[in-house]
Image 1 (cartoon, rainbow, N blue to C red):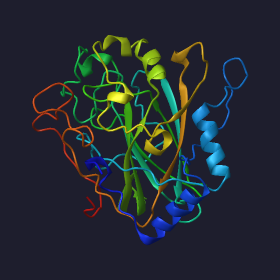
Image 2 (tube, helix red, strand yellow):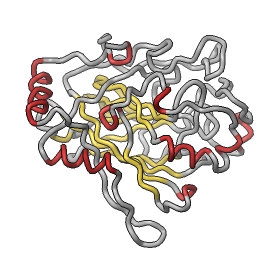
Image 3 (tube, rainbow, N blue to C red):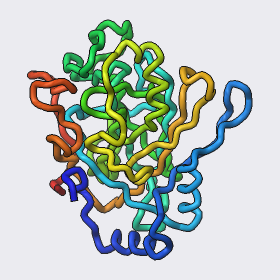
Length: 317
């Protein structure tokens, strides 16, 4: 068991849920939601093979507890409750749909789950840490011409309704050394919206969402991503992604126009969680979730940068 999976303690209820899935089929994968959508030409794009496999698993009543990993070095408290988190940041549009399911209760949706995401911009910079070096060669974050707040861009919450679904409007993340392209995610329950933020409750899940290498490559060749030059990390070489597809956070992606990646993508995934569990998102260091090497490339948080932890959580790692 590696450090990034330290959160995966198995309760009796959860063990029963996982065991039932194993009986139904050892090859079960996490269920990934997918809905066809209109492209520029008025047609619809097909699902990927992974999505088809996942839908088959879902139809068979199988669901998988997601593997939790560290929150990494760039978390900030007090993200805003909002659907659009771009704040004018330039990049390829990404519509993200996340469904939260309770793996201990027949994969029922988790009503009221607060899903929090945060990720870097097209050049590898995080809000709150804009002087951190993303590796390779990139313009300064201040040169992108956006009017984004350098403490809040590309961070936000959404609270799920009865279907367990939240949706975000953002941009395709860029990259920073030594990590692959990814989005950080937490699922909170038991809190409430207050003054535009989410407060109280507990963190049930801390994880990361990942992108297909070929799709990422096509995006990184587009402006403004192309201005960040250097070698980016593929999935197989990433210190966090463990190669288990949707169960490890790999998004199902559909292009708005398969011939024009600049038009954007729709990413979907189902997060299977245990609503009784608590996760601190603790960890870091090589192999533990993306803490960059001290003093080196990759975005070591600069001295004096904002810091923060999970709003309310107890140790679980």
